Length: 96
Figure (cartoon, rainbow, N blue to C red):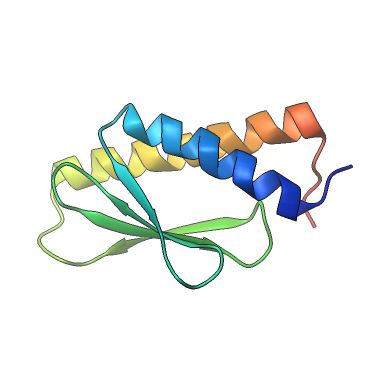
């Protein structure tokens, strides 16, 4: 079984690729395990975790939350689930 420190770069690479399909940008923050996701509609989401793969995603209120925001949020959550599941299946990671 691999450690999460080996898995996180793989997750980040796969997740970044999935976000590019929706023209979203992923920016790693200075604090460890913190990321900022920006959508083409200028919505901002913060993604972080204390124990991988228990990932939290929150909407950063920078404007008015629209129907399009909800669509992006569902897509991002789906990408997170896809990436975690793919890594779990290929690496046999277990949740803490």
